[in-house]
Amino acid sequence: MFNNFKVLTSLTKLDLSHNKLSKLDDVNKVIAQIKSLNLKGNAIESVKGLEKLVSLEVLDLSDNQIAEVNELNRLGTGQA
Image 1 (cartoon, rainbow, N blue to C red):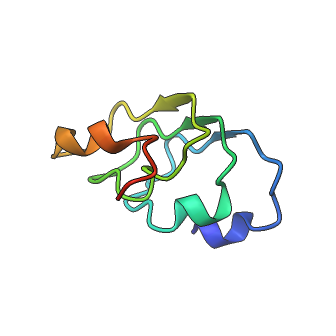
Image 2: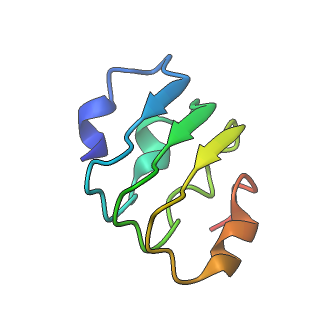
């Protein structure tokens, strides 16, 4: 899904709320400079892929299905 954003290299704010997204794989490869990301109301179960978004300042993951909250500790660290 995120492959469609490859040309948006200057994108800093993105609202993908309520889009039935379930995976975030490779999100860091296409929107690496994102500062604000709204993923509210999707079907996301894991934050894998977000940990390398080191420019991220605002993130909304409310109303998702994230089971492992410890994954959130790695956000913004650049470590998988």
